[in-house]
Structures are given as C-alpha cells and as structure tokens.
Image 1: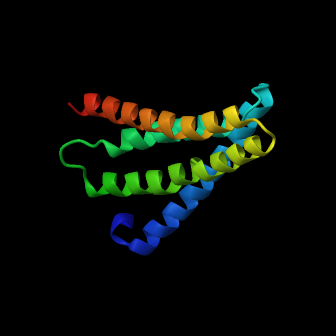
Image 2: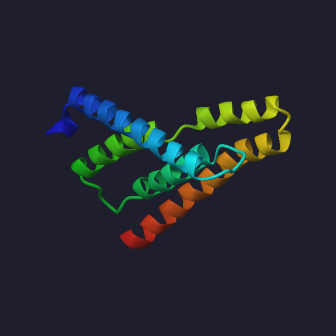
Length: 132
C-alpha cells in the first residue's frame, strides 16, 4: 500500500511532477505555436487549467478514503505541481516589462493570480455539486 509508505509516496509524487512538467511544456508549446497572442498565453492557460483541477481535487466528499487522499496528494503535489508554474508566469511578466510592455506585464501577472483563483473556486464549486 503506497499510501502508508512515505518513501513510495515521495517517489510517486516525484514521477507525477515530472509528467506534469512535460505536459506543461507540450501544452505551452502547442498554444504558443498556434497563435500570435503577443503575450505568453500558453503558460497562462496551463496555470488556469491546473488551478481548476486543484480546485476539483481539493473539494472532497464527506469521508475520503486513504487511497483517495494518497491519489489526491500524488495528483495535486506531483502532477499539477509540476504542471502549473507561476514562477514562469512572473518571469514572462518581467520580460514583457523590460521590453516596455507594462500593460501586458501587469495584466499577465495580476491576471494569472486572479484567473487562477477563480478557476480554483469554480473547480471546487463543481466538485461540491458532484459530491452532494
């Protein structure tokens, strides 16, 4: 039982984080290469999607099983932790500011946090509707 062994949980979280990082890179590259947005829409989209799913997984039913809690930890801390990247969004914001695009920089940084928070809340709300 992996959920009772902290070393195995650590290994599963690490692997899931690696898969999340690869998924982020692929989705970011796909979105970036498909459009001419003038700002890093790929990372923005990744953070919104990831936050939504963290919201879903954070809202649980009345008594989650140990297996569910372990799976949630692997998915949230591992996969979605590797998938989302607010630090990259901040670096992208700084890059925009350095090129004089202050409006886009502020919109990216503030929009990332605001929209990700709303996505998290929406995911949690939907999960609560399902659990009722």
